[in-house]
Length: 511
Image 1: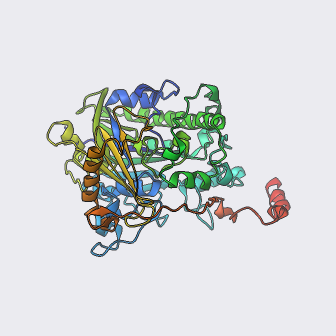
Image 2: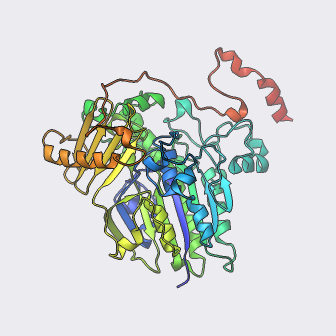
Image 3: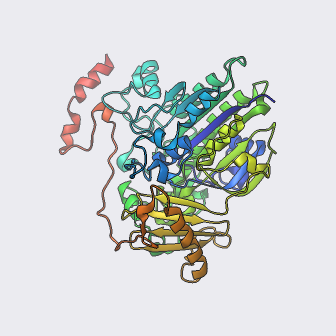
C-alpha cells in the first residue's frame, strides 16, 4: 500500500461532549458523526496543558510542557541545561519533519505562535488568527483576503465577533457564513486536497478558530438552538469548584462573572451554533477527501486543543483540570487500515499526534508521546496514567494533574490544595475524595512527584514533596481585547473621544 495522505483537523476550545453520535442529543453534527463512523473515537483524550498556546506547542513538537516550557499562553524561559530555542530543545516541528519525509505540507488557520509570524515549517501556510497584529492586517491571510475581496467590509474591527466585555455574550456574525474564517479555511483546504494525484502525498493541518469565544455564529447557525432546550449546567459546591483560584480569577477577567444560569443557556446555544457551523465546514473538507480515488488511504485525525467550562463548576474558560476544560474530542480514521465505528478508552495526549503522523508516514518519531497506531495493533502498551501541568513549576499558580482510568488527582501549589475524583462513579467531578481515599491520593501524589523529577519541572519540588505556598487570591483584573490594527487599544477616557475621526472615516466610506 502506498503511503497515505494525512489530514489533521483541529478546532479551538471544543468540549469533548459536543458530538451527536457520541451521545449529545441536543446538538446537530452530521459531519463529525461521519468521522465517528469512519474510524476510532478515543473517549479519554486530554490536553495535558489545556490552554491555546501550550497545547499548540505540544502538538507541533510532540513534547509535554516541561520540555516546551509553555505552561500557559506565554512561553517560560528554558531551565539550565535546556537549549534556548524551541526546535533545538524539542526537535524540528512536525510539519518540517513531514516535509523531510517526502510529504507535501500545508497549514491553514490559527497557529497562535510567539512571535506571531514564527516559521512553523509548512511549505504552504495560510494564517488566520483571532485578532490582527498592528499596524495592519496584511500579515493575516484571511484578514487581507477579506479586505481585498470585500473592501466594503474592511471597516469591521473584529469580524470574528466583539471581545472584551462581549467575550461570553451571545452574538451573531457580522459576515455571511460563506465569508467567515472557518469557511475560508475549508475553501483553502479543499483547494489543497484537490491538487494533482501525481504530487507527493500530503500532510495537511487545518486549524479552525471556533468555537473559541466570542460566540458569534453566522445566519442561520445563530438561531438553530433554543436556549430553553440546552442541557443544565454541572454545578457542585462553589467553594469546592473554586478550590482552583484561577477559575474565579479568569471568570472575572473575561467578563463572565455576571452570567446567570439562564444567560448561560443562551451562551451555550450560540456555542452549539458555532460547532454546527464548523461541522458544516468540516463536511466540505470530507467531501473533497471522498472525491479522491484513494480516499480509503487518507488518515484523518480530528481533535481540539482543549475544552471550556462554559458555566460548569461556576466557571468559564480553560486552564484547569476539570473534564470540561481538559478533555477533548479525538477521532482517528484510516479506512484502509483501522476499524470503523470503534470506541477506545485508552488515555491519549495531544503529544501522541506527532507519532500518529510519523508512524503513518513510515518513519515513526515519538518524542514524548506513545505510538497510538502500534497500540491499536497490540504492539505497544497503552498508558497506565497521564500527567498534566499548568503554569510554571515552582510558581504560586502551578497545578499538576495525574489521571488513571479510575481516578483523577489534582494538586494546586496555591494553598497546597488537592482534589481527587472517582472518574467511574463521579463523572461530573462533584465529590472530592481526597480525605476519604488517602491510599489512592498517596499513590497518585507519588506519581506527581515522579513526573516533576524531569528537566523543566524540578522547581515544582520541595525536597520529597510538591512545593506549596500560602493561599493567595489574586487582585481581579479585566482583559481588554480590541482591534489594535485599527489603532483601538481600549475604552476612551471620555466617551466623546471615540468619535474622533468618525466623520472623516464615514465620509470616506460613503464616497
